[in-house]
Image (cartoon, one colour):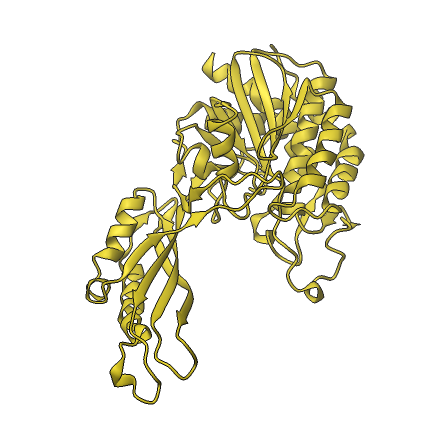
Length: 402
């Protein structure tokens, strides 16, 4: 099918007021992780009013809107949960009002990533309204629990709903650049046991905090030794929490635990990251336990879908058809080359491509620097451009793979 890119962009421009209103509506609905029910139903209402071919809410609580029934399965993903607002005094606007000032929409989730959800829904509207068709089935996915456990939603979609697209667009904020991936991450605990006794005679016990102290120093040194490659960057490890137990504050600690945030470079794996800690002399001397943590929190539908807190690195090859299509879609719509980059943070791509090998490419409205901030914001112009890109991408992609 011959696609008129200018017509797609013009149609997106005509939808500017509607997509803006929709985004402000869903910003006004609080939806922290595991509490997304109300925003799911508001998105469902919008998809149905637009005329999506099918709209379903799966067993976990993700919402999936389908357009078309062709051979090539394409999905576009935006998580619809947000972090909480933190200290309300840090906000200069109501985080749940969706204030619009000088072409910028403010509020919790504006950038991360209800703005993308609004643009995706309206990308689908462009396809429907212009009666654009080709040999693809497009799923617009509003996924849940990403902020708590990135990628869990797609583990469920792939394993239980049996939806396995050939390509997925990750709509996390890229400032309208085309992104190829990001580092992975793990959440690890190191646990040390001691023997408690009265604090007046500490020599009678075995202080777990003292046993942990050299481990802390060794992990700091380990971070300095980690390597990587220029594009995604080096691996890192940092201690984000220390805690201990004892019968009282007048007693020697009988356990100590540190929580590690481990970021994984392109070639680093679960096994490597765990082994690096287990082989530290201080860990061996303390007979410490190294544990990759579990996640098992009910979704808004009450479903518990346990997983390990391991989120693999992913990186799309530069010659992949999805990347070429992403760049050319941008060039044909906007008359210039996009920025090619990668995220600093993590996305649902850790499951989709990291676990399952399904290629992912990133394109989203908003700048990731505003994610989780009290100044969270998104330009209306980004919504318009992103919706046009989402509408055009499937057709450009098919020219590369047919």
